Length: 193
Image (cartoon, rainbow, N blue to C red; front, top):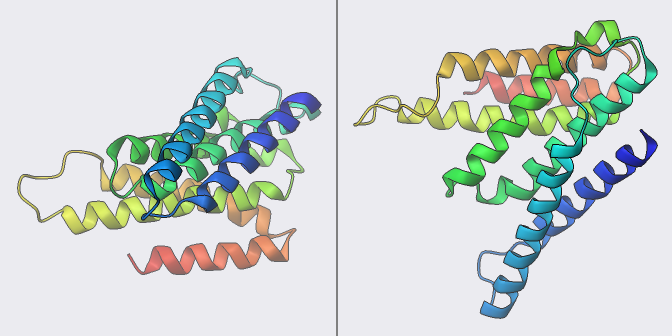
């Protein structure tokens, strides 16, 4: 579990670092270098994700379950960090972000209150997933009057999943003033769409 946790954290760090290097007006050589690094990290994330044990049917009270939940969340957050810069213009990147955010809020079928203590970094990871849903709900609602009708995602499904994430973040905010502040920002952003 410790090795999986370290690998997931490294993937998250590498994704965030590469995402921070993105500039829309890169020179050709920089763009090709960035693209190669992007594809490499994306493959590493997907390969790693495919090796992870499933969260389904685990004992929520077992200490390794908490670690594995964090490993899955870090891996999903790495996907979001890597693709978020392109999610507005590229439907593949948007789908990667939405799938990763959904994964984070299904919790592998686990009931979060049953788990007990959760690493506080989960609040930060869930905030990233909340922003993916807030952006997508806003986009879907802005297209609701468009022609042809939008068929990409249900507003209700997006809102329900976001509410699930907000509920988890709310439960965590009782123990962390930082997470409480993050929850307030998410609730404010959600109320404006």
